[in-house]
Length: 208
Image 1 (spheres, rainbow, N blue to C red):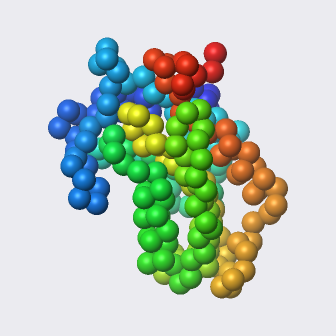
Image 2: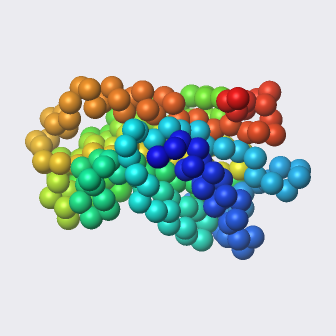
């Protein structure tokens, strides 16, 4: 698929979140996406989907939207790799807190989970949190799993991108059975994920 087709869809979906959309997080008051002074959402999520991957639709919740992509020949019912893209219209949602909830969910749904330390930094002027989590065997699926997460705290939304693998279960304290080439490709892909703001080219420049 063309890279910017997905970006346009995400931007449009965020921009059309209803004014009544709300989300409560850990006792914080509900917030809505912050628009620019002109009233438009100007942030853009930048990513190039892996070659040959296809979008499988975008689901829209009260306060967020999620898009899933799969390699050719895979779909939501039968897959080994998936790309999940979430845009959450909450101006106060915290990237690290969201990642921590992913870790907690893995501990509940997996026989044994192995989260890496959370890495925090800045990318294009925005706070970023990343980590990986292994799952030896899902309690419901019976499959092993590996997920790499990158969460970017924008001014107008929280952007969360996940690369996910699932396959044969593996032993506790063992690495997920994925190739070094796949891990390298995941790393390169996630490094390229960023957020920019068309209205603030000094702090958050967009590519030209």
